[in-house]
Image (cartoon, rainbow, N blue to C red; front, side, top):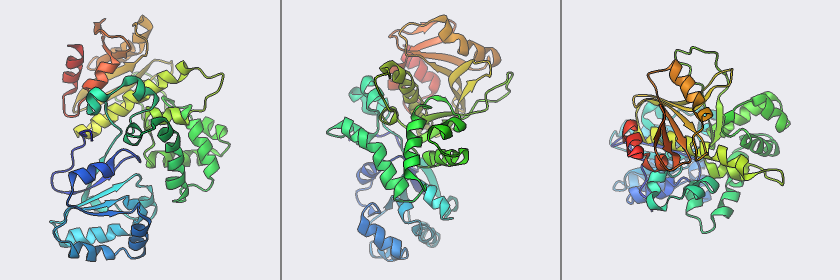
Length: 389
């Protein structure tokens, strides 16, 4: 078992959300071997507590030595949350850990997330630094870093079934959409928008549904944690900017598994978006695990100047551009130069496919070394320094 960077809250109850297969259950079993564990993936447990959520009170009372109380996939029995709330109110020493791969059903049923009495945390796919010497950049770009896939005896087969598992067990079983076939087409169409500025109207045409239906599918995609959007960075904007966010699937391997391929599709067309998505998922995980007030966005003017990622907040102000090329061309730096002209306070960085650190007025770093040095809690300028050393 690889050491994960996720650090739980010291004493309070908490929700642990994350996509399926990111290792939440494995981590909890290792972290809390003496916990009172309720696994709602088990059909019998799901039926038992779904029928009478108040049974949780008796279970907690008859096992006073088993702590904390871990409820896996709590969204399957949302009626348990009011009971958990009452138990915490009556006994402040009780600690609950509630996992889930989606908060959508909890919100749809009108159940609040314990009114702030439990912190919200997330677990992400593996980071390169978590895998250490076992990290392979080529494998990360093709198979991704979902622990369920990484640990599988046949990773390619596990990856092929990953999206189907989500559609069957989350979307179809929970009745999140009316037309599962249309949603499956939406997933394929969304794979063509991975790493690109999002156009919901185009997505709607591709999957043959109305625009409002496509917008609802996008909401489902984000709520199920298998996709996310990045907003446009707008602080003190000096130029006209695009108004649409960027779309990413949660993992580079998931992107490749959903993207249809044929004789006319070249691997080079997938490699660029896969790399950009890999950097995006690492930056999101770094922000979540570091715990500072940082935001991740992108910057694009209506004239076409663009920066892939803008990190802004307590960790500093950085603009990052990602290029696969092993050689830095002047045009690769044009977006960063435009951003630096508008925001001289920012540190522009190019992540590229070469092996040497270059300083061309703009710091150019190998993206493989950058991913390996991205460790939560380490200052971002320290990470850049470590890559450039």
